[in-house]
Image (cartoon, rainbow over all chains, first blue to last red; front, side, top):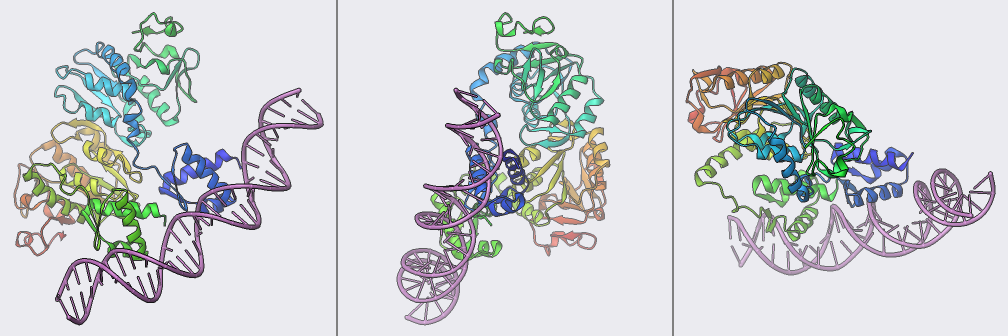
Length: 248
Length: 248
DNA sequence: GAAAATCTTGCAATGTTTTGCAATTATTTT
DNA sequence: AAAATAATTGCAAAACATTGCAAGATTTTC
């Protein structure tokens, strides 16, 4: 049994039960308690769980990371969001995926602009709530706590009945040959459906995400109509994209 | 049972009741009072609660900065919410309509309780988000800005496929002969569907709503299984209900 | 491809923490 | 002031953690 496997088992148990007893894991995996202890220590150091006397417990309430970690890039995201908003026209049906850049976009949408927004993101829906002219349609389903968006079969079915004018697709990584990629398989399915449900696909992305790749592929680069970054169109980082995609 | 778990339970009890008795915790967790005393001492040192003779009290008891009028009804709502939570059992599928009483109920659901919550309410979903053991299914659709819940055909269709164990139905008015009523027609349709989608219907309601009526009818009083108020079962205000409904 | 270096794992000896109990002291209640 | 309840202290048994070590597996290096 590989260490990585044990780690997955431990994290999974923690996710399910909110805690694990060291002795239970040792018995379950048929390894010595020492090994489990070392595993837990590693996972603790990697900030995946909290090591305590007798086992480990879930980090649980540390959802604050979501906001804190990303503050430094907020300026870039605002810049991108503003560019994105310039694309919006009265009466449009807009599809907003999750992510902090789209959240920033939602925040900056002018309150007098009359549009319809579809979104599976809880924070985005909350952000749009006070804007009187925006009709919000929440794409329901099981909520993924990490990303705070709904995923699974429900959202996919709902999207299959939609044709939005424009989709702002928050992504994890984009690469000229590897395409648009993500590390969560279910989120990939959702984003694929979002692309299908939209006439025009816009990817707002900070430059850090450019030219990187993750495990699962959402689509090729040329499935995207427009790539928005905080950089200038002529930035060398973007030159491998220009042929197939619009830049902004 | 890990020490960390006991700490979570104690803090949670303090959060809910603003105080705990040492002996109650000892009995609840089936450990010696000495252990609980040591736990409370640790939590006190970590500035998580205030240790007092006989138990502990909440630190932020006076930190509430609600308007005075709201505090009054909030207390009632907390009382109702606590009664409601006592009905919840591990593994249940719970349907939560909107409303501030249900929001209070959502706030007070213990984080270690493993249940599935269906809700069309944005604030309730947000409230449940940090609780690791609660699976949240958001009932999608067009968001009504006043009530911050989704309404319309989408939610109705979603509910038609559900059979929840228990439904907490926030209502506007309840009257012995006029039944349960509401002023918004679309919300009435939604709540009708919620009743249909649940094995058991519980109405948590502050006493102000008792014996009043609105324009549109959701159901007769006897479609409700249990009425929870902040009052005692034997309160004269409730005596016209007792024959057909359970009281709490 | 063999040797060296590194990593992984279980074991044993030793050290630490946790927990309940009992005796004593302090606080609250009647 | 007496009785009841709670807190403190010291203690011992059990559970858990740490450390160093050695055998085996894996990777690196030449």
